[in-house]
Image 1 (cartoon, rainbow, N blue to C red):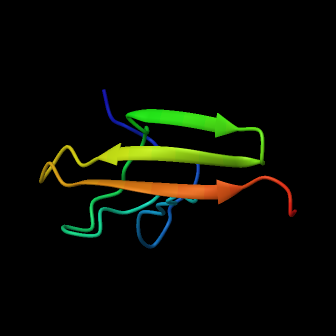
Image 2: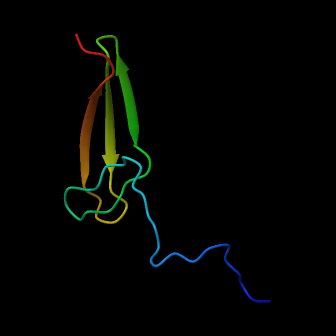
Length: 65
């Protein structure tokens, strides 16, 4: 059985969809280890890289104060 494609792309298309990359090795991270929301409108995500085990934290603001 042969694999057939509906269209041929010149190269594979990849999207990071806004996912963070590990600051040490550059791997794209998919799921935060831990997330926390506070009532001031911030979400804190704790990340751990599966490739190099580097851990770091990101924080985003949902609404301006």
